[in-house]
Length: 300
Image (cartoon, rainbow, N blue to C red):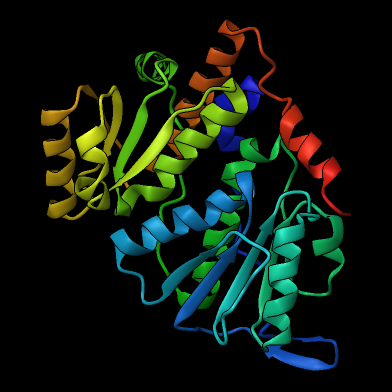
């Protein structure tokens, strides 16, 4: 798994998504075109794609609203959906995709295979990695290519994601303390990715608080330590909120460029750090026994 993180750039998709202008599903024609609402459905390591797309849409002021769907339930009436499922068999994502199609909402899938690939909607097929959470570069860039194809959005496509040993060591020390990850809403997806990597890889339990809402409740009970996230690209109101938090609560600040290269480079180091924490705790970063047991107990 460490090898996947160390060589993440090899998974970045270099070519545009090949999508039709329209397709037929269940005897109904679906047009793939710009919509004011973009739903991104997914869970776990696949679900973070919607979170990161939402972050970028806020920072880059993309001309559509991003709504992240992480449930069976879907109430949208119009728009466009990208359904992301690494395995292609995620029950919640498949259910949301079917509900969208029933309401006439076009669905585009990102997957390695499974039921999503067999559903009959346009698919961007991605290469496999050691685990869904290690496959972030291919899922993330697949979604971005879809957005360029439909909306014409611009994004940088990194050739390399340089390794910074000092950053990895800082993250390892900071996350080992099981901190609260504090970030503004424009970096919410990155914050949750940090927490989720610590949960699944290292089997530890940091929490997340999002600003400015956390300044209206959490701040009174907070003790620290915190891992605070900021960026030169976020609104000044958000940067100030992060700075004020660190004046009141002990912690460490991490600066992330809100570009595709910056996000992937930072999250590469989060992955490396959490795998190394797992190794220091003598746990297997690949195995997720409680998640597998939950799947076993749920109705098939």
